[in-house]
Image 1 (tube, rainbow, N blue to C red):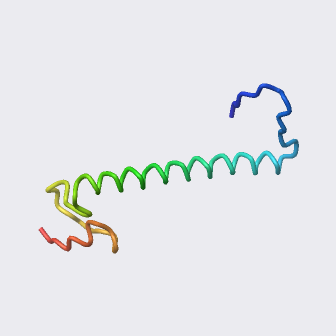
Image 2: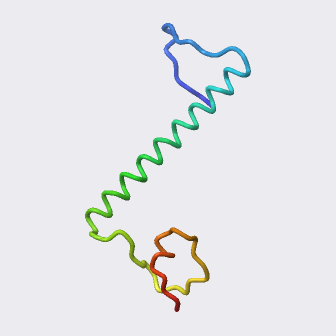
Image 3: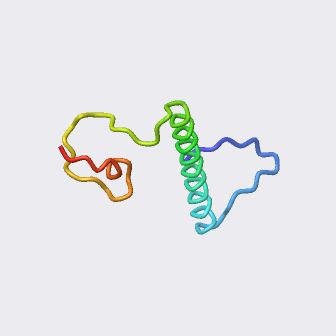
Amino acid sequence: MITYTNRYGDKIPKSSLGRLFGVIWILVGAMMLSMFTAMTTNAMNTALDGSICKDIDDKEVIGAITGTCRASLDVEK
């Protein structure tokens, strides 16, 4: 992992545990940002589309996870 620093008072962890915490903190932050972006995009798409759940393709459904959009359609082909 490479980060840019300007060496003006930057603090870095020196222990292995501190560095591990830093890496985990960065990864959690990246996942939170990506989840926020995905939820915002989904909300905007739903608002513009006017539908909450619709079938995109005509492929045969083998199974669906309970509580998902596909399962709520309850369509057997």
